[in-house]
Image (cartoon, rainbow, N blue to C red; front, side, top):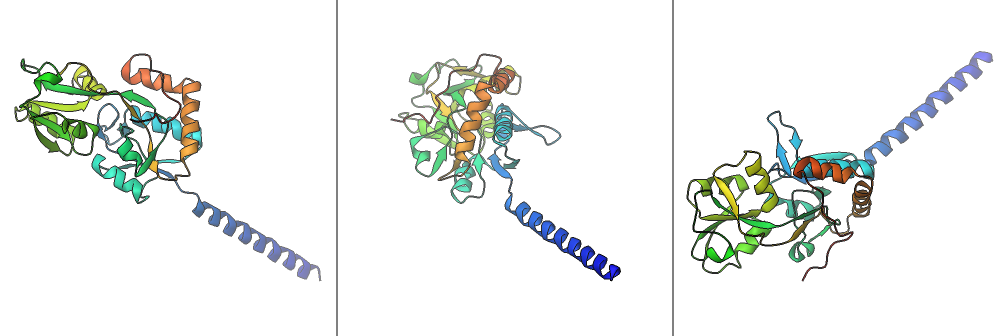
Length: 264
């Protein structure tokens, strides 16, 4: 009789454990990583070190945002011109890669509040004396990266030949080799590359052509957008954003809008 009672109790415990285990497994399957796309060819925002590690301003930002939002970050390398499509079909949960908030992009995806103030610049060979600013670009060959705001801006410049490239590395190489006269590029990224010696025989001329804001891109109706915005606010308030900004740019960060700016 006693053995039978113990046997029933033992079986009951086993059944209970199995039910709990099944419940745990079921819930775990429902938890997914926060998959974020980046193109590691964009110094100093996102790049890959010799040992394969992803580093950069954007990488530090998305790590800090994910931590503040309680999300498990998973980075995926995708070429810049493929990021919007990846977001539209929900292949990834977000993308960060110096992506400018534009009215055109807002038609198909959404953006977080800005995390970076930037602008486009003109870069030429160091020995170029002909191009000093925007007014000297007429009749020149201009290099741009496909899918960027620089590519869109180049279309507004009269009487120029535009050559499209998949990466910034490619158009800078053609600039150095004399195959294009100038490139329209991110001002911060280019100045950083020149300063650190990663880009030689190139200089930036004139004033910035535009004022832009970078945001974390997400699919339309993203369930992550609110937590991302709150996380950006958190890292700005607790000083983490300032530390990251000064680490990469060695200056005080600018004041940023607390929502997506209105676009004309």
